[in-house]
Image 1: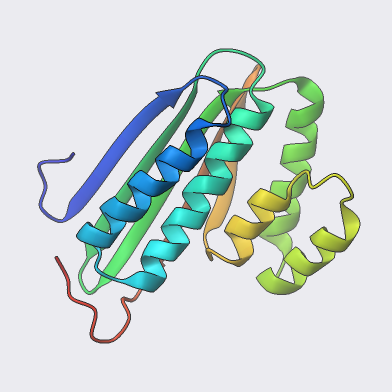
Image 2: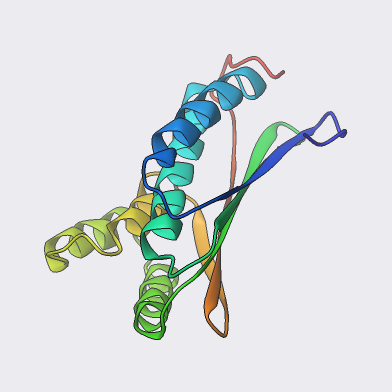
Length: 165
């Protein structure tokens, strides 16, 4: 945890084991519920963390995948930053670049996600599309040799009446 009272952050390194994702999801839901006291923003963070970690674990070629979740109180808003890093093969890297470029170019998040669901038969990329559309986070990627760092970020106004903690 960050000593700054306006921010909360944690980082985990996990081996490519999909069974860990549900445990991390529960932890994030409880943490956000306590720190944010806002159901909508908590749901966005939980969905994004789940999908980004699933993506990192599913496509990791070796070694541990890392995830960092940051929650920042920015005046009256909440800033969310989620970063994953994992190794991946060249083909997956090309596919991931294409998806991120498409998302960045899309003017309607929901329409893009609907088109993505119709287009992909094996589900590849749907998790990132869900982060983009349902969680409302902007996605970017930094590619280095055989690894990728995916960054999802957004800023949200708390629901009226939500207590700030």
